[in-house]
Image 1 (tube, helix red, strand yellow):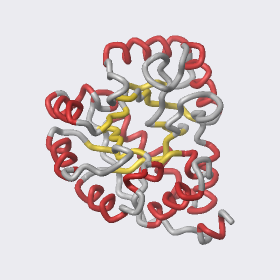
Image 2 (tube, rainbow, N blue to C red):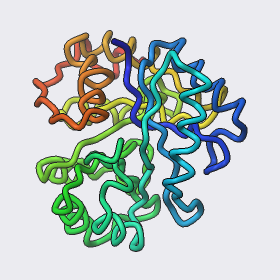
Image 3 (cartoon, rainbow, N blue to C red):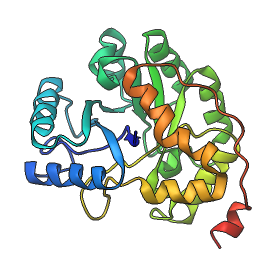
Amino acid sequence: MGFVDIHSHILHGLDDGARTAAESVAMLELAAASGTSDIVATPHANARYAFRPELVEQRIDELRRAVTRIQVHYGCDFHLKNDNIEDAIVHPQRYAINHDRYLLVEFPEAAIVAKTSEILSSLIGAGLVPILTHPERTLSLYGRVIDIERWVEMGCYVQVTAGSCVGQFGPRARNFVATLMTRRLVHFVASDAHDCELRPPGLSAAYSTLAQQWGEASARPLFEDNPRAVITGAPIVPMAAARPRRKWYQFWS
């Protein structure tokens, strides 16, 4: 059925992703060509970019008419800041993927908020299922595997970036992905695509890398089964422990 990409910035003119409608279309064509059947458009909701649900829906409708060989879904790259949190608790479906229950959550880069567990618990209490985005690329989350594990035990999930799996963001990010995989703390791999060249929407290279290292049975749910559950609002089936076929530092040496 193809890969499902739950994190992308394909909607033009809304954030630091696609700049024009033509670039949005080109990104979709790239995604489809690399084996992606469904992609979630997740413009930022942070201090720099206001989240405008009506405009998000309009841009998605335009893309659905322009490119028919890939399905585009509604979403948001939700930054943990006070006004976002307060509004999401009152209007959870405004930010959730396909207006259902799964929510991409981006942590602050500089530091972890002291009440992070309480905030995540409040979002869960509002009916949302937080998906913590790219911890391997977030400075404030480096070395905090125990915290990530605790949040997963609370009911959160974790998404890593496809580029991190293949070394695009350097060895530190790549090695953190391996650590999280070993601890069964990776549930999704997504592109977090912003353009056609530097951060494109393809997932095939990351899939090949993880399948070779961890096996198809461990890789497939991260690209297909789990993200497809997200876009349909279905529960995510618990995964078996991932065991590398080779030691990750041998694989990437």
